[in-house]
Amino acid sequence: MLHSAAFRRLQAKTQIHGVGSSDFYRTRLTHSLEASQIGSGIHAQLSSKYPDLKALLGPVELIETLCLAHDLGHPPFGHGGETALHYMMRHHGGFEGNGQTFRIVTTLEPYTEYFGMNLARRSLLGLVKYPVLMANVHKPMMPETTVMTGRILKAGQWHPAKALYDCDQRWFDWLLQPLSRADRHEFTRSVDRESNHRKAIHKSLDCSIMELADDIAYGIHDLEDAITLNMVRRDEWLKAELALMEIDDPWLATNVMAISEQLFSRFTYVRKNAIGALVNYFITAIEVYRKAEFAEPLLAYNAKLPDPAHQALTIFKRFVLERVIQSHQVQTAEYKGQQMIMAIFEAYASDPERLLPMEARDQWRQQSATSGQMRVIADWVSSLTDQSAHRVYGELFA
Image 1 (spheres, rainbow, N blue to C red):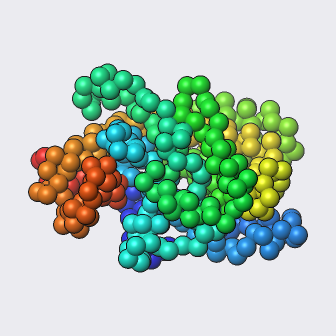
Image 2: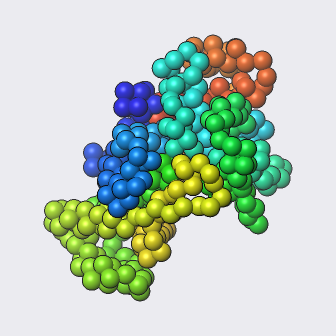
Image 3: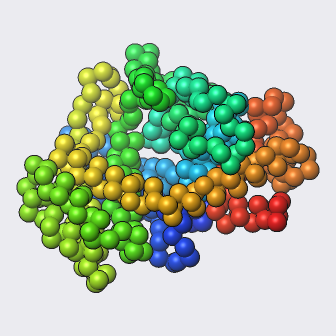
């Protein structure tokens, strides 16, 4: 994983867009490295708390690998790029970052001729956050006549369903083959949501650990970036601080006020100590529970935060979402990236034999169906970094 091209590309995909030029802020790669370290800490804590489950937890390197790989499929410009590619692929199976990760490790990354990274089943199972196929959970979006040009495309109306691509079903079937029929049926079950796509409800033990590590890294380390880059102020944090103090948790009751002061300290080492204390709080709070629906232990056991810690992490994540991700600065950058990705895709699709890079052109020629050809273009465009997308856009349109 560390030596793969897909992982190296994460160094040029920004974690928070629109923050300007700086060697401080996190990229998708540094985020993945931090998630991997947190995942390692979770594994150690659970091995100590639940000695009877130590064998089931497996080697720590497995969790580290999953955390390193979890963002491989994310396109340039974050959710702006994902929305753009999903819209351009709306008639050809859609686009979704987690589904693209599965596609990279099973098909695209050239470690083998036909099988991508040729990962073991357990590794693949740990990467599948949403064990459903797109066709089974995707709801029709707004009538296409409402979108006359890409510039008036409303991102909120074109969020993809969280799922694997239908074209990758053979790998999904292979992954689930050892499970009993009852476990397969339950594991791939989804629930309806009134105003959105259907949603998968299960994940494996390894995946639940990886997702917790990702959430902690997002909620805590991205907040650190935002504070250091002066994207949020102490007074803006006050509402979140008060909400944290209302949670029925002894550690929070004792430490929230001091932690809040430390987060906004002018001394970097003080802020770092606060970040470390928060990460440690969440890691040590994690517990394992069993779901009665499954016979397979890897599906029956999941890791989770108890309610107080879950509430606390939700407050951190919501603060980052509302004050940082949804800020004018970040959304403007994502909108610009969204337009660039749609324009690049449209140009490639208009004349692939002329404009696609040679490697992608050869893959495009091997496809007999239009949807397969469009998937090749989506694979290529999504593999671009933020910088290379700027360069390609300039080559095509400047």
